[in-house]
Amino acid sequence: MTAPRLTFATFSNIINGEPRCSNKTTFSVDPSTERRLWDVPVATTQDVEDAVQSANDAFKAWSTTPFEQRVSKIAQWKQLYEQYIEEFTQLLMAECGKPRSIAAGEANEILALFEHNLGLRIPEERIEDDSRVIITRHVPVGVVAAICPWNFPLVLSVGKVIPALLTGCSIIVKPSPFTPYSALKMVELAQKVFPPGVVQAIGGDELIGPALVNHPRVNKISFTGSSATGKRIMASAAATLKRVTLELGGNDPAIVYPDVDIEKTAPEVVQGCFVFSGQVCVATKRVYVHESIYELFLKAMVDAASRIEVGKADSPSTTMGPMQNKIQYEKVQELVADSQAQGYKFALTPRPIAFDKGYYLSPSIVDNPPLTARIVVEEQFGPIVPVLKWSDEADVIACANGTTSGLGASVWTADASRAERVGRQMQAGSVFLNSWAKTTPRAMLSGHKESGIGGEWGSTGILEYCNTQAMHIFK
Ligand code: NAD
Image (cartoon, rainbow, N blue to C red; front, top):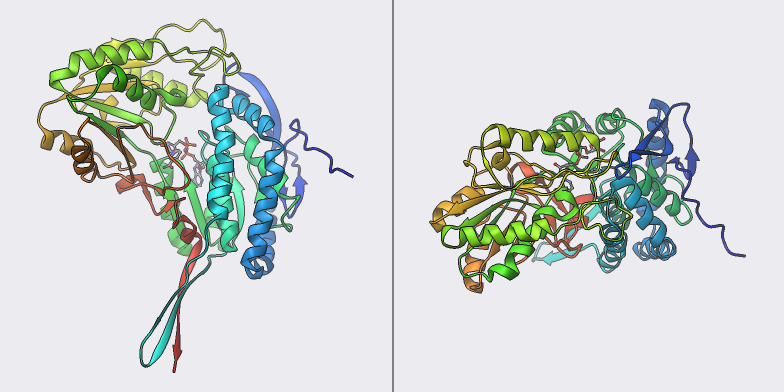
């Protein structure tokens, strides 16, 4: 007998292995049309308590389940997921406004996350001298709360769940209220494999995140979101000395040298700025171009950005969908308006979009605004980018590093040794040489400065879900 297929038309919180409704519901909207999407329950204080209790109960058995059995359960979850990649792709198109290629990219990235993590082992070190053997081991930290943003709701939740489960932690996913659907469904799918309480999901409103952060029986917060929220979380977590991993905002610079192939490089840089409407943590947010090629490069960027087809997520010709939510849409419009009010020159002005509904903004490029401009200093997280002129290498490196952010950076030059020399001077967690930010689960994703604490993915990201123990065995 085959198991009934999941339905993608109802969505619940998942507590202690069961779907949990609530008297209060909320919903999100499809940003392409502003159409109301499905109802989701708003978790109550009791729901938070029940989820934390269940996670603590489940932790006892899950953390002592042999590692290979945990791996096998995660592999079963992956197999189930493989049957639903198209459904998850459609969900991401609806909840995020992602064009099909980007939504499918996110849905397929989940397979890469599974594959990478399934190949990991928790390291153990053994050293010995005349008097003792020291075994350094990594034990699961306990109950984890995964607090997630709206831009990659599936990758950035599953990217926390798999390593937590691998190490023996139990985990409660708290999706963003803007994009709750794919994460809730993924956790529902997990119930077919894992014992109750090992992986749960609760969402609904803005009270649940703080309730999890403040809860004395939650041991660790793995957070991805804005630097402002990250600071609040760290302050609250101090009360219980919770472990935190903070993956926060950025203001990623790209430095372009005069030896690049302009026609080839400018469209790539444009892609790095405007992929998913610039709503990517490691999107390029400032472009520094050498003065000797500035005009030509800027023109090539404008040409490439003008070819971007802004439209509904489900239209085959769309290469850039809407902004994901109204608040972000208005914030970016406000930055455009500020640049216009300050009299900055636009190399590419936002053009009107012919839809009555939806949060559409076409790409725009600001031509060499002052270094103190808001569009240079702030994380825009939308489809507007400043292009700035440079002449001296030491100066441009200082400018690139001269912010409180340190998430990503890119360097573009035909000279490979220069690329690496400059790349090594970037104060950023991820540095891309002759590429825009193409992340992979195989590399650690982390932020320097106010872009984060700790990191995830890569070969050592799982250790963020562990406490380290040194065991001294005397002879
Ligand atoms: P956000 O900080 O507004 O919200 C993120 C999550 O935190 C949501 O689930 C929200 O409900 C919850 N939250 C809000 N206040 C909270 C509080 N006081 N306590 C606990 N939880 C709370 O971020 P966002 O707007 O959803 O995401 C966009 C931001 O995320 C951008 O700054 C982007 O750069 C950043 N981001 C970073 C990475 C990375 O890997 N570094 C990846 C994606 C996004």
